[in-house]
Amino acid sequence: MGILAQDKHKEIAFFDGHAATDAYDVFTPETNARLIATCARLAGFKAGGRVADLGCGSGVFTDLLQRHGYDAVGLDLSPKLIELARRKYPKVEFLEGDVEQLPFPDGSLDGVLLSGLVHHLPDPTRCASEVLRVLKSGGSFVAFDPNRMNPFMYLYRDRSSPFYSPVGVTANERPVLAHKIAAVFRGLGFAVGTDYISDLSYRYLASSKLRWLLPAYNAVDRVLFAPEFMKPLRSFVLTFGQKP
Image (cartoon, rainbow, N blue to C red; front, side):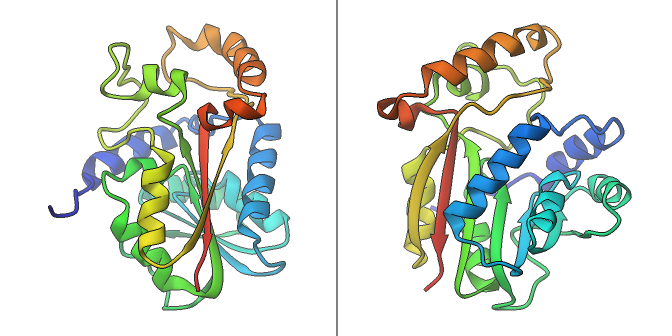
């Protein structure tokens, strides 16, 4: 079976539409900072290393990486989001580009952050291969994506759910299964690990009908998935690994 293709035209149109209102920075600033600190720790990014933020959107995570002392560059498929990122963070480097055809030389990066990106790819093989190509030997990556095993993510965001809502999502995306994402990177030779995270507080939800539920959702998510035995059901999967 061939690799399933992402509809890039739909992806660009969706995210270009969000650039006008700068509404797609969905987490609170405190959550953004916690998420990036967790990702950098799991990946073991080297201080001062060249780190690419793939799927950077309006640049909030790229800017945080820069503030953490990395030589950060953001990349996104949406030209309008890249324009927005450059306006918001003029001291940070941003590039328009495709994660399946990265504009970086072989072995040029110390680290790669896949910012809520993998679940937008029907098959992440090409992207993972490009990550392998651009990383230096010993370089590392980390990805965070919504977890299909989380009941809320499944019910609201998975196409097989009877309660699925297409509001605020692209035609390409679907929450991930941790073992499948790990297998793709492991199959390319990466040493791969998986972790999970919840208690990520949202400040925005695309559906105006459900937006009023956000405080309740944030509170339930914080308590329900805190126990260690609930870890595989937490809202986001963190996949990380190192190139040999």
